[in-house]
Length: 113
Image (cartoon, rainbow, N blue to C red; front, side, top):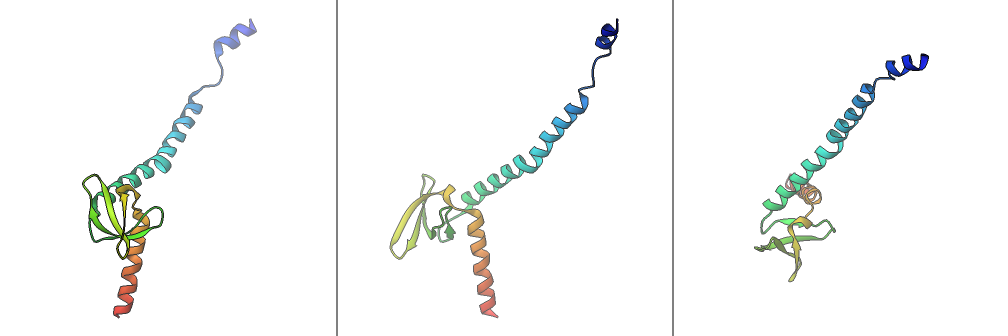
């Protein structure tokens, strides 16, 4: 009889565990997945906007100037006088290139004063 009463009463409610799991998924989305997707979107936008004449840095650390934008989505960059390389647009690092441009602008402003 005691066993029948305990079986009918059930156990602890699974709702708190469910709320914790949902909360963990929401936190993971807002702190990991969403920022990564936003950064990838910005990188793609940056890669599509670059044009000939710009100084860039690749993800491998190669510095160069874009000499030609090819129709197949690649870039021809000049890494030295008369030395050219063909790279993919996606190989251009947005973070390194923008940091290099800011640094160059900062030194140009400091020397102009």
